[in-house]
Image 1 (cartoon, helix red, strand yellow):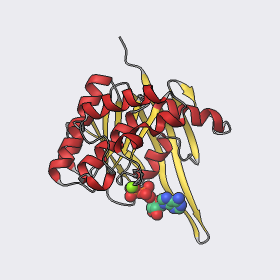
Image 2 (tube, protein in one colour):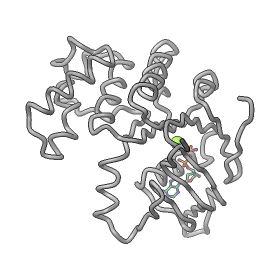
Image 3 (cartoon, protein in one colour):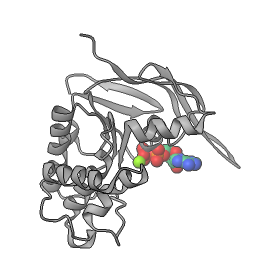
Length: 230
Ligand SMILES: Nc1ncnc2c1ncn2[C@@H]1O[C@H](COP(=O)(O)OP(=O)(O)O)[C@@H](O)[C@H]1O
Ligand SMILES: [Mg+2]
């Protein structure tokens, strides 16, 4: 059976405007992301990786071009629909974990459920299950300061997975981690991809980790270049 297309970008451009002129960061991006894909996007600082990821995640909009989610064109004029699409389908992980320091691990992880007005028991059940999957059992009542960098990032992953997104977007998720924790985070991505079927797009500087994905793209001069045999 043919794989479903999760998201498709057609001729996406992005310009930023400054008083002294404009820069065109993305100059014509075409990308088809299929169900269960594991994609790495690599490239030096400042080439537009975060811009591209934010556009895919509907946190930002392109200057021109079209984006289709599950074959349906994104309509930027409908903020409510965008929000609902994002909530139902997309999980985000950033370089910094952005956990709430005053909240415990379990409270941080259940946040998306509480915002979505799930019942508290259902939230807790889901959070315990996710934390177990990520080898964080026993740390549910810790506050983030008591965790290692790798553990904090795993809590952020659990939070991103809480609503079971079809697409996980990770922007340099291992940028602040030692090699050991970075490897563990990638192993988790592979496990999630395998067991839950989550599609993953990850921006990384780490070539070793990029190679664990099944497609690698280099962002250069505003274009995505597929690296073959990577
Ligand atoms: N919101 C913004 N407004 C203006 N310029 C921006 C904005 N976001 C990013 N840029 C510029 O766009 C370029 C690409 O940035 P970014 O997407 O963060 O690159 P990367 O993630 O590859 O380091 C940089 O030159 C950056 O200064
Ligand atoms: Mg970036």
